[in-house]
Length: 338
Image 1 (cartoon, one colour):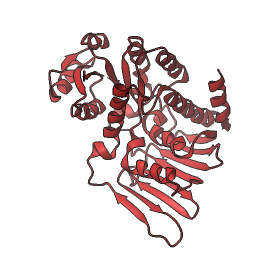
Image 2 (cartoon, rainbow, N blue to C red):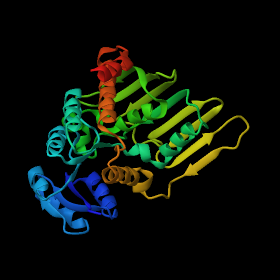
Image 3 (spheres, helix red, strand yellow):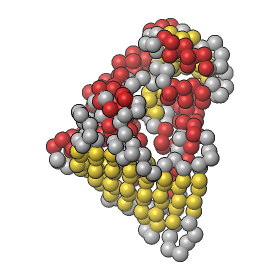
Image 4 (cartoon, rainbow, N blue to C red):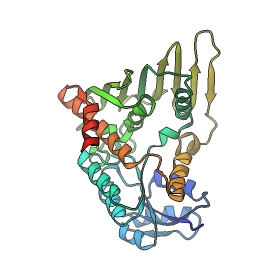
């Protein structure tokens, strides 16, 4: 089988995570790394197996003969390179977020619809062991979710300093809380309405505290709380979902428990000793993406899924600014009818 030739645009931490995983996949050949800081590209290229070339630009990366590009640049810089790759007919794995505006996301969506390349958004939490287990319980009928509480905090916006710069992140929800926002419809199904109260407490230029109420088309309800300055109090990432006399709970990516019913034995799993790349879902999301490329099947998080996530985040911000409840289901209906 001819190997998939992968190139990386961006050479930061997350590129190194995917690079370490992909070099173990016999279906993949990592061809090059591009970064505007060539020394950074050389550092990542040198850490990977094989003859991996280091270059400065996307054009140079494409000229190496790659057929797939992992876009691992800062949040606000995804749109232009993703569109260029898709227009070149290349496959794209884009790190989150798809874009930080609906306009940018729509441009990517249009490019993907007209490209022979496959677009995928990296949302690793779907494949984290704890959240996979919750999803399994829901799909098996062991947990019928009526109500949920979701939390994802940062301890501070100081290290690294760019996390406080909305010009790079697109806003706190796009950098950190996007993972829990993605899990809302993943567990509960299509969103009906969104209402958010947000405050700007310690940040100079953006909201840093959010309280969100979400309703779903199936009648269930969830709340989401997210703070940018919680001091890393454990657990800073957690989910609780309540069914009929049942509860599923997670703490970080470490533990998950199910109380399946009255007077029934608790089910508990602990992934503390599982390697980070696995328990974080990175290994599975990369494997599923490569599977899609090899088998010509739908990617794990396709362009429509990614676009609707962007719409949902923007709806939360809109509600925070206006104080209005957003009828999200109507927006999705209009999108599908367009």
